[in-house]
Image (cartoon, rainbow, N blue to C red; front, side, top):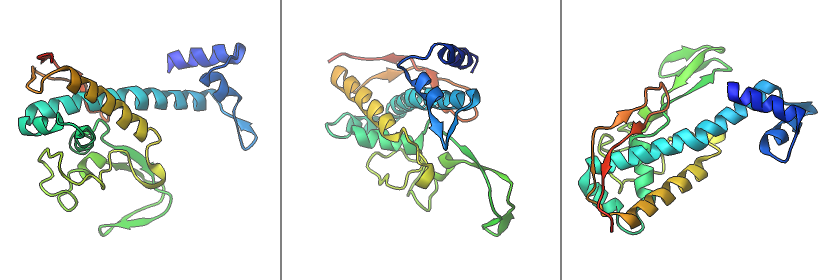
Length: 208
């Protein structure tokens, strides 16, 4: 945020043909965005466009290594999308989101009063046995239509299509370049309350 703050200040003084300048000049209902608003948008783009996708890739690579039969299927032509979707369900890079409850609502016999802050752990929902049979099994053949890795309804992630595209392209390039019997070493995890993924994953490959 310190970096973004300096960048915003520079663009306010010297606007250019770039996204930060466009955000500064944008108007919503006749009002322009504050420095805090512009910084929040940049932070969202930085996390969603970078952190989440790189972590999905690492998680996909690790889970395929841990499930050799699934890995062999994932390396077959036309199966990359299934590999991506099962990773999003089984080992998503995003774990949860917070919401402000705007009215009293009853869930499972408990009244959640208006004004409450609610933590929604959608990574747990993706392991719900009522929705996904054998939810703790990594299975790229399963139905992924009810996965909640990118949210749902009006809160569906704006970058979902881009994240899926980026992940698929990288995995397809790797499939084309190496054999499927790669080995991985000890994964090193990122310690973050929401972003779930790896900072490193040593891998030994055999080029095609």
